[in-house]
Every structure is written in C-alpha cells, then in structure tokens.
Amino acid sequence: MNDANNPYVYKPLQAGEVRLLYFDNGGDDQPKVLGWCLRTIHMDLTASHQNQNNLPVFDALSYTWGDLSETIPFVCDGRELHIHRNLRDALPHLARRGSFRRPIWVDAVCINQRDEAEKYTQIRLMHHIYRQASTVWVWLGKPDMHISEHDNKTAIALLPRLAQLGQSLDKQPLPRWTATPLTPESVGLPDRDSSIWEPVQRIVCNNWFRRVWAVQEFASARNITFLYGTHEIDTTVIEDVVVFGNRLQALRDSAGLKLPSDTMATNRGMVRIRRLVGLERTATDKSSRCIPDHLLGTVVFMTQSHECFEPRDRVLGVLGFLEGYNTTKLAISETTSLVDLYTNFSHFLLTHADQSQIH
Image (cartoon, rainbow, N blue to C red):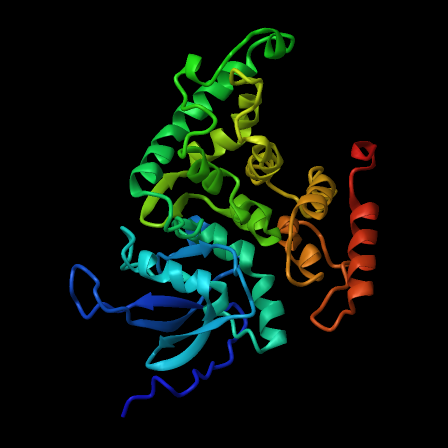
C-alpha cells in the first residue's frame, strides 16, 4: 500500500537526540529518483566535535525559508510532509552533492514544526549541530531563468578577481578613491551595464545574508560550501568578496556612475562575527568569564540589518553564542512571553558583559 498521501508522524525525541535526513538512491551511483528518510541519532553535548566517536558524519543546510504562504508536498519515509518552495528547489541539488551519501540536517524537516517544546529544545542544540556538521551547505537559491548559464558561470569566475581588486583598493590612501579616475574597464572588469553584474549581486547580496539564523549557522560552521543552483562556491571566495567588495565603489564609469555593489558592505558583519567566534572558541574555561565581548555588537547588528519571521528569533538566534558560559541565571523557556524573553535576555547581557567593553 502506498502511504505517500498519508501525513508523516514524528516520534518524540529524547534528550540529546536529533533527526538526520538520509537520501536513499537504491544503491545507484547517480541518484535519479529522490527518496528521503529520517533517522534519529544521539549527540553527546559534553564532547567536542573531535570526540564524537559514535556520531555519524553528517552535513547541515543553511538557507532561507522564503515565501511561507505556499507549501509543497515532500515524501519522507513514504509519507507526506509539507515544505516551502526554496527547500524543495534545494533538495535535488543536495541529493547530488559530492557527499550525498552523508545524511544532512535540515531544520524544516528534522524538527517537528508543530511541536513548540521540541522546536525550543532543538533550537538550543542548533549551534552544536552546525559545529559538528562535516560541511554546512549554504543554499543561495536557483539562478533566475532569464539569466543565461554563461553569465552565471562568468559571474562566479569573476568573484576571486573582485575580491583581489577590493583588497588592492583597500590598501590605497583614502583620497585616491575619488582623485584617481578608475573605471571598471581600466582594471579588467565588465562595464556597469554588463549582464554579469546581476548574477554577481544575486550571489554576494543574497537574502541569505540578511537572515537572523544565518548569523549563528555561518559562525558555528567548521567547513562551508555555498551552493548557487548547480554551482559550488568556496566560502573563502564569498568571504573575501563580501569583506572587500564595497571598495569597488571607488570605480566610476565615464558618466561617474558606480558599479552595482552598494549592498555588499552590509554583509561584512557576518564575516567579522564568524572570525570573532572562531577566536572565542580558542578560550579554554569560559564558565566564570563575562559573556563574549562581541555579543552585544552582534545583537545590535542583527537587529538593525537582519530579518526573521518570528520576533522571538532575534533572541533565540543568538543563544548559541553563549555556549560554555554560565547562563544559569538566564531564565528563558518555550513558555516565556515575548516581553519577558526580550527583558530577561537584555538584562542578562548587560549584567554579565565586560563593562569595560561597553561604550
């Protein structure tokens, strides 16, 4: 009997358990028909990622949910779940990723979205999940159909050059930015009206960079690969373009117009936080220390420039940065009201931060 039209029924998770999404291709080397199933594993929260001996190697997905008004059937274990279009678009590419035999953690499927208590518990584990993942795949979506494959490939190939040029401009004395008549053509770039700039913008100014949850996911990950349709892009390329891409504003065409790179600067904070969190992890005993010096700035940054569907996510999306610190006085649970959530978290930050770092 085919149960594909019957709804999927989640089994309750025990403490420390998470679900992973496996792809079953029936043993073929090249997956053709998508077949997904969920399996439960136990994650030792007291062990470092090097000491998770019994934990299967798995990947994780970071993405935007997109339009919540539309859901699409998704068959898992022969039963039906409903997911959003952006995830539906990502799944075929994830099934064909180089590590497709590894299971992957996807929040919309691996968490029972109708169980508020489970959602809260799993949210508190998310920084562990993304840190333990072998690779975090950042899904930037499918290229628009009106953009040619040639332009997509050319745009991706151009990214390292943009980063290199941005670094070069960054080293120049500031007055030269306006005094030196640099044009895109003079430094080997397409002119500002080239069709190449649209896919460049869709990659480095992607909506993913403005997602609240992406900040924690990006900062927690050990290894990251960006996925734009069928194209894989190394994270170092993306990071360098995001950090130095705003320097390209020094370029002007013959009419004095800038390249369409204005929004790159707003994404620099993502890279900065990732690097700060990496340094923070090198600290040994953090339980008696003040909370991370960068956390107040992170909260401000995320409030100003990041989006979320639920107001609670502005707090829940940064709790992972408190790992290893004494948070026993942080009174937050799934039943905490929105007002108390914001009040308790703000009070905790301001009373446990290093006062010398507050200006």
